[in-house]
Amino acid sequence: MVEYQDETRAAYDGVVELYASMFANRLETHTFSRNMIGTFAELVRGTGNPRAADVGCGPGHLTAMLHDLGLDAFGLDLSPAMVDHARRAHPALQFDEARMEALPVEDGALGGVLAHYSMIHTPPGELPALLAEQARGLAPGGLLLVSFFATDGPEPVRFDHKVTPAYSWPADRFAELLGRAGLVTFARLLHDPASERGFLDAHLLARKSEDTVEATAQ
Image 1 (cartoon, one colour):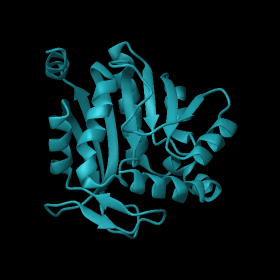
Image 2 (cartoon, rainbow, N blue to C red):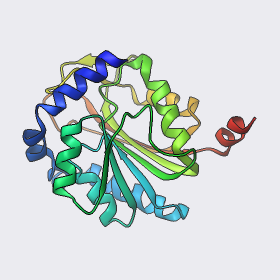
Image 3 (tube, rainbow, N blue to C red):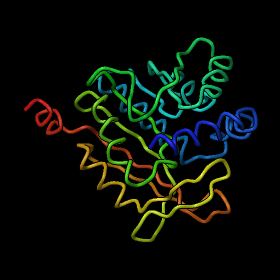
């Protein structure tokens, strides 16, 4: 686990300015992603707990979007250079260096977690523990919106991402893993790829079930 995280951190540290210039305004042309995030923010507000973590926040543009949509949003990222950039770009918001499998939040503290293509570098064997950590941080009824590259095949596919190796997932398999973590998928959107890779773009919206809270208490 440490090796792939170290590689991912170093890779993103080295492309901060280029990455920010390419993606900071990308949602202006990505209708599906923009509207899924808007729906997520509306539903999180409806829980009565607007505290939301943007995990793998990168340059902080989506953290700022969540803030503009009425959430008490903060950003977390593995890359210290990304965190530094986000703090400079959005000085009124909170950004911290952190790993997704060790969120610096108390149990049940969050109304929402956004993971926008930030889990794609996680090896398949490590993903269940990472999803369980997101569930731990969510309050009962809290929401997770996870976006990733999807494949039609039965198994995850490793591919050469432009920054560092990544994985695409069958949407049904990913939803199964969410369920095992106590997160019930209630909405999903798959659409044609926005890149030359040919993978579908997938967005799964899940809610922390009461059963997870009961199981944790036992």
